[in-house]
Length: 421
Length: 112
Image (cartoon, rainbow over all chains, first blue to last red; front, side, top):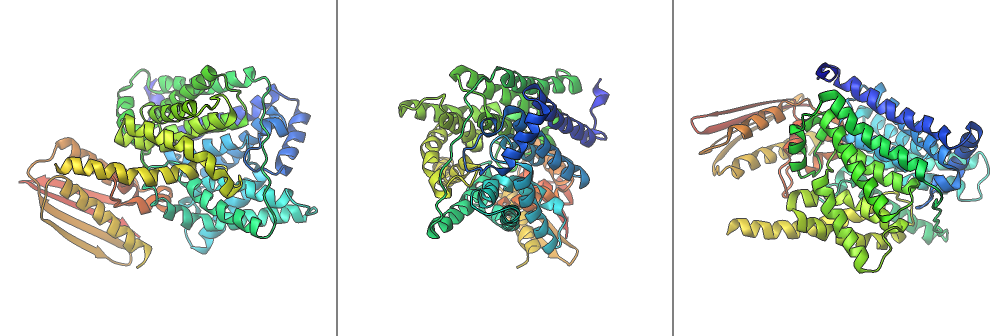
């Protein structure tokens, strides 16, 4: 059985596993809606302005959202496979994050134009696109800008499509140098680095819109309907990842002890360091933790919550594990309870789950630092969405960058003093 | 300064960190950059270093280079706030580590 998994076939095994999950999303869409409902829903998804928060479960239907997610993940995976990239932690985290956000904000049109913009950048720099693939995938954080420009105005066909694509190209073109520069701001202690970069860029774009008297009206469309079936599917995806590890390398969990000891700070690639089997097991475990938390607080499973769960699962291969996410989540939960927030409300759910962008702080500096970071994140994140007017889907990444930049120098300064003594 | 030079300096900083962290107070550094590659050689006296650290270092420096990781995260290398061995391994092509008679020697090659 162990021969199923070795260094020679590891890359192809990863391809097969990732293909499986993208195809699973596509096929599961027909459990919810008829093919015609799914395809009509897809058209609605593509043409709907997507400022934070637009839940595709609500504006279209669950089937269309799942189909959209599967198609986007499959397209991105094809880009990875064509370039013969070995899917490591950054690639897997990007694939799952984009797949998750394809249930609330990303679709094949707005994602493709941004990726194409990064591709043009790589051509002009005379570099291989494989160098920029991860940045390209994460840069789709600003995909709401594309649909806002194209379909949130009175432009006629085909000018709306043209403007949408051009705005995506511009965003994609300028993201690579910005993303690799802004990572220094938070020293790698916020995992959603592009979320921070996209927040800064989104803030500048939103201010230009406002300056020219084109305010970006806020949108909040969230699905609150029955969720039993979709909940079972997400639970099964988490469990399948845990089972996959057991099928591949049986019950050998020594590697997992090493994984949870790691801080998770950028760049901690669990796939390269601990192996794909251990990394995917961790993805299943952190996904399960999120689903159990959502079940306990009675939150509805919809597009945004699945995006959060998928994002955490993706980063289960690249920095997040139970030891570093739980203190952050606890800090955010405590802050929300103290300030009288309903934990099952959409904003609270997203804050708690996405606050795990700061997991490396708990991983490096311990439980108390993690709780503090989570609490601060919960208080800051709600103040920042106005700045970028919802153009940046990774709002917690934006906030997390500030929290890490604020906390890490303070903590390390006291830590150094202690060491000097 | 071009990007490759900046990266070589950051690699050097990261390696110097290892020496200082293990109590070395005199590190001899030789940095050479040509059109095709950059080479950093370091040596310094260290009283004791665990075998596991040496093994981890050897494995890290000989893990296949990752262009995708490098482009996005290279700016983190040589950071004040933590060691970045995980990133170093993605950015170098070859690495040699030896520890004999209390002298730690590290040589790293990065092709441009």
